[in-house]
Image (cartoon, rainbow, N blue to C red; front, side, top):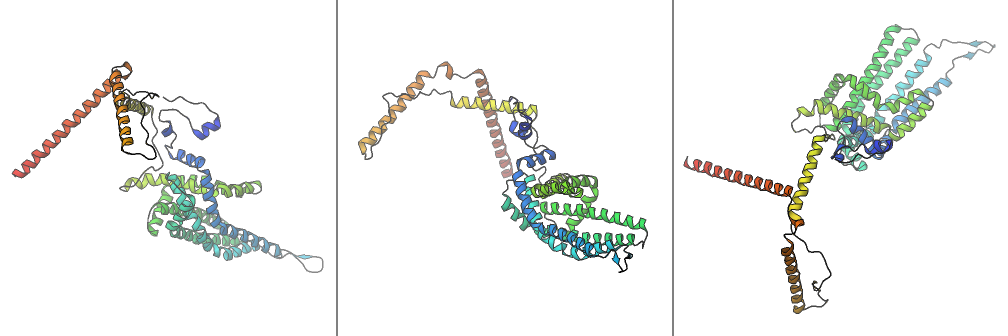
Amino acid sequence: MAEKKKGGWINRLIMGSEKSEGYARSTLPSNRWELFWDIFKGRFGKLFYVNILTLLFCVLVFLLVFLMNGLLATYGSQSAFSQNIGVGYPAIPDISGLVEQIDVTVKQQMLLVLPICLMVAAVGISGGAYVIRNMVWTEGIFVANDFWKGVKQNYFVVMASLLLFSIVFYLTMISIGYADVLIATQSGSVVWLTIGKALSYVFLGFTFICTAWMITMGVTYDLKFFKLLKNALLFSVALLPANLLFLVVACLPFALFLFGGIGTMIGVILVLILGFSWFLLVWTVYSQWAFDRFINEKVPGAQRNRGIYEKVSKNDAEAIKRYREQLAQASRTVLTRRPIKPITDDDLQLAELPQSYGRADLQRLSESREALYRDNEEYVAAHKDDPQYQPTEAEKQFEAEREARKEQARRELEGKQKKRKKDKKEEDND
């Protein structure tokens, strides 16, 4: 049993605990949580690299949000919410719903560009999702090479998924905007309009979950688009509580933007360092668990639990120890029974050939080799009965067991050969 090494908290956090003979195997992830942590701490640099590549292709989306907010601020500053009529008294017009009308007008115009921005973002997301999937499968990766390989294989699936989401996002945001206008102008039932807004937000969140499933499923399996959409809808509905939990965890770096001030600053830093990689890693680990549980076990030949290893139990560790002892005995039986003469600087030396040599030199070399061989054989004959070269009781038992296994295997082979000849003879007689 390996001795347990004591270390500080940081050492245990990074290296894990040494508890068994199978220490190297005991450090491998045995469940999804350990797999996530193993990737996060062991491949942080590659996660950062993937995040930068993905972020580069999502710049247009951030630029669109920035321009839309800037345009809203510009319209707000230029709108006449009050006006002086020239005699010292301001005229206060009815501005009910003006802010909401400006908001919905700007969104109607600016969000038309969203599909184009998402088509560019699909390049980064398809490549990043492919690299993260290979990490979860514990495959060897080269980030740049695998990133573009993922783009080549998965771009159209990811692009179609994002385009579908952009259409739903546009229609949902416009409907919410008009609901705000109607509420502000008191042109409808506030209760029903508020319920409609809430349902719109719920539908938008459900669509986002469905899109995330479509992306990870499209990167993992080769499916037609409508089959992909159907399966994503099923997973979105059937695993709704788990979907909400892991969606919240995956969106933590982006959720900091909602707090404003210092929260926004921290959110920007986290998104620049790890935001997209964090989201893809959390969702991919979760989705691979779902695929193993609901899909891979029903697909013939599909590999399950990629990246997951069984823990080495105490009994297994003892078996490993016994196996190593048997190997040591076998190597001793084969290699250390024969006496070996120590290397000494005596008169017996191997003749060296000069740069220009003839037949006599070759004859002298051959004679020196034969003399060395005879001297070694004489040493073996003189020391073969020494105690250190005699087998121990454990080695004798091991040798006897090995000979018994060899004899049993020989008898089984002879029996199979006789049976085969007998069957062949019966077939010939028939």
